[in-house]
Image (cartoon, rainbow over all chains, first blue to last red; front, side, top):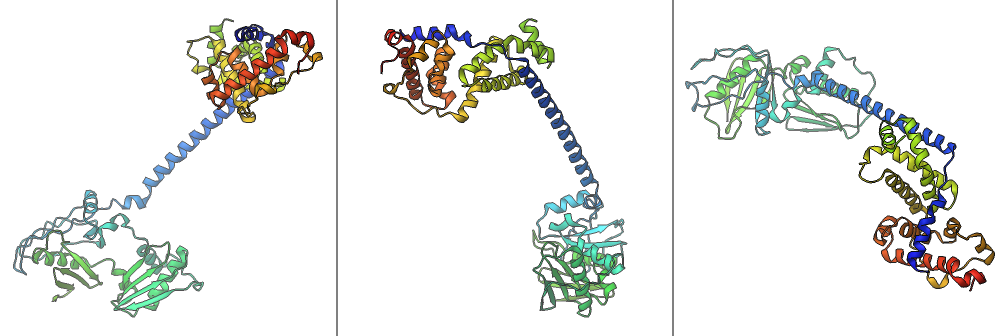
Length: 300
Length: 179
């Protein structure tokens, strides 16, 4: 018998295998079909629910005040075009109250400084060779790189605490802190992970402890928290005010800075180095300037 | 119900049309599965899997070839998928160790190809099925079973020789088995 004959034999007789399966098998197939349909439906339902939740989450994120705070009105950095001290033309500072200013500020180098003015008033009144006060409610000075984080938590927490909106914590601290004091800088560090409440407590305690170290820069660091930095003022109230520089000081600083020699290209126009309730210090080239409420002082 | 009506009904997931398809092609599918699987239970399980796949993937049928051919191909693939999990197709059997069944067994096998195929080892039976009945090429068999073409050829050769010697040789018919 040849191979082909063998194959043909099996091909022709293969129908002998055919046999109608019973109705039991059909009922099994039916139940299988029902299961796949219900699985498909439940998958669709799950997908829809996930989609709705995701959309709600996105909407909630963009609707939160923290996000909207990022689009707060800002002031453009002051442009200086004059040289020499005093009796020079003072150019009008260009102040923007538009949200676009923050976007512009972000584009600049991270070391640059921008002055962020909330609810800035019109400053068209600044004219040549004259110093006029401009009413600015609150001002914060922050590095441009941190502009996104306008609502810095430590400040908010501290202020809330001293105003009594957050109940003072009664428990004593149960974690170790390291303290370093060098050249007027006080650095408090803890390597342990602490909660927000404990961090607030630590800030409050350290401020109480160092309230007499006026002028010192107090820095508090804890893992998982933004470092808290503040220049200690005369008392708690003044320390608080340190973050809101007196309006007149900001304007004076801007005007004085405008009158100073043109800074080197690429250098920040106004780099404020120290803040106090009554004093604002900044550096232009190698010269340091500080302005108080009553007088202007130049120190080399 | 015509084939077109059955296909259209299955596309709508109409249960009546699906039942009609089951009645029309169930026998062929069970026959195919029985050739591949050793026992009836497993063959019925494969029929169920094949029909479920057919009803789920009916949208992929493009009306080019015969509907029956498409369904049978799905059934064969279901069986091969199951067999791949448990069978070592690479196990080669040299023709010189062919063992022939006893004489009393042979009388029952006359023209009963189901019993004839059952005398073959699993690997050889499947390769023989694919090559001789389904018309697959060695390259296709090798790809389907994950074996080399050489293994496919040797398995087929073993199956052919055993079937010829056992059921189609004149000496076998008269003397039973010549070992």
